[in-house]
Amino acid sequence: MRPVRLIVACLIAESLLHVLASVDKEAAQKGKAVFERRCGGCHSADINKEGPRLRGVYGRKAASVPDFTYSTSLKNLNLRWDEASLDLWLTNPNAVAPDTDMTFRMDAPDERKAVIAYLKSLSTP
Image (cartoon, helix red, strand yellow):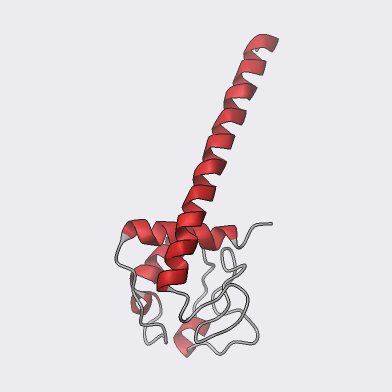
């Protein structure tokens, strides 16, 4: 590849990464507001409440916060939290882990996506 083309390709890639990072930040900010309104009664980023603390949840093994008591069904899952598993969980926790203690559902896909972006932002340095 010619040096000029390589430079142009790098500039385009850098611009796209900047746009994607901005979109992620916007989604995470929206997700924080949704989280505080819809999830904050039971969850916090840094303290266990009725539900476990969620900082670092993205990429973490399910039911792995050491000082929180989970339902047996959730403890028996061999699952890492990622976009797909969190989306399923927020849609219908009982479908993921029957008889789980979490009964809350988030029906709106845009709210789930925003909350997942927020949770992901809590899990990255």
